[in-house]
Image 1 (cartoon, rainbow, N blue to C red):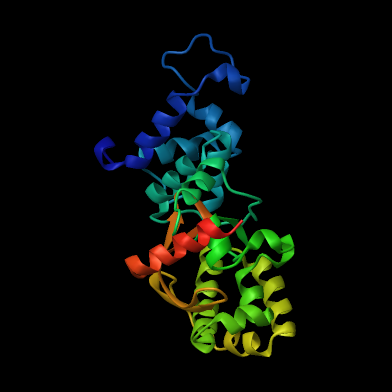
Image 2 (cartoon, rainbow, N blue to C red; image 1 turned 30 degrees about the vertical axis):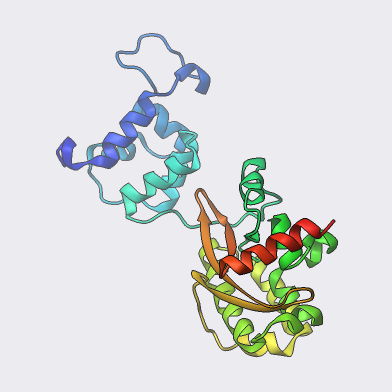
Length: 275
């Protein structure tokens, strides 16, 4: 048996069940020597044997399976961060991601990107549907508000919209890069079924996409430079950085900054002049 100092999983499980109110789980609160749920009550809720659960807390019996950990997480009604920590302590890696297509962003996140006056910013899903954008993005890049919701997808725009293609000063490079970055994003988020539908659609609509997808290239969006031909400003250059949104593996944010102060002033003037 591991000593308590060498068994962080056991300490974590004891702390979790010690914080819980037995009555809220349908158990009697009377005649308890310590607060919280008993081991056998956790085992009952997780549908595992009381002996096996006791061994987990004591550091015996080897590593539990992902199924057992998920049962315990449900039994203890863990939050997603608590469940992830349980997996990290037990198996050394987070739980397998199950993608849920998001439908929007929080008002706080929208206010954050709205505060970027001359820096186009957008929030995208793992399948590269654009859920949120700011005014600068609408004026400088693409006004997603004028597109039907089903067309607010970066890949659909790059490969199926001739006007977006014409804006790219290096369309071949852009197309190759975004396919590789999309592949990595989708795999990370566990969105295999959603990706399959989108990939099948794009392969049928765009031979260019089909060829690049079959190449199996993988890229990280990271940061870099974007050059486009704007209808009013002409050729412009932006530096971009991508950001993960904590607690939301299904979402990512991209912020584009004007490459120079002079470019920023041109952006500001156009944004202020656009109704």
